[in-house]
Image (tube, rainbow, N blue to C red; front, side, top):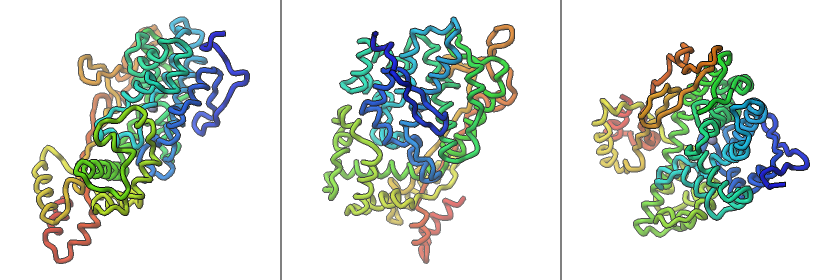
Length: 432
Ligand code: ZN
């Protein structure tokens, strides 16, 4: 029997707190899970620094990747399997893409990518197509199979229905992370009736659509996404931790470039500092390595690096204040000046950060990040865009919410303010 069709003698199951069980029957899927690049995802947390706010949020990208695979497996094997619009030949490539869609995420992805100007999607492609164990398994299916999986993840695959299961406004990725992140953070938002959504999902030519009778379950899903973004993903305190993390990497990079002699040499980061890194260097990194450096760097001679590391490790984070860039752009300049006068480097200790989200978007062809809307299949068979039928979705549709904050070490300012008008002025400005 061809490798692509081989089934395990006995089905394997992973116990999962969100989906109860993750079922694996295909030999290919089992082999992919066993590769070192996939196992690496156990050492990358799904929510980065969020565990410093919601202490339960220690779950990894490994959990989430298996979860996305399981949702896609249920859609294909249960909801789609006997429908003529679904092409069975696409089953394995869809399952592999679901499992591997986050393969290129690095340690504390967001912060790491920003500081080193990297893109995890490029690393996902790199690991799928490079000299890796994942690539070797996928090659056994067929020579062009790794590229097919990469195309589904990169959204260039010709069968758009397949792509929509992994990335669209109602895809398996979102359905898994919303529920999983709600479960591990312990918040009460983020839950919705996924079983119902899977039951009413139908394959159509360009994407999966939802039977009209399932509209309220989809409304619930969109609202839970909206709530999760503002209550969990953009939580100002976990953003503060992320700001500090970015500043640690930033400081280490600046010190390295200026010839500073580290007592703990940044061996794992050197190739990123001078941009000579190879795929291997990236795969070798994980969050425990970063945390080890942060622990050791708490004793570095450089005061800024040592202080930032100690803040991160001991959770002594920056405070924040609201700020409106449209009307208060002068305030930042003024604050920077005052910080310098007070002997606090604003480059590391005065940070502005913005978060922004669009809960749901209707179709705006040609605009950047054009998003495919969710379509309802009406009783007469016609498709209708969700916000036309749902008043709730219509109310939040296309509305971007953005939030700006300034982060700063309030503890330092409070300590220094006794009899120092400069510090008092800074604090007064930040209070406004
Ligand atoms: Zn994902």
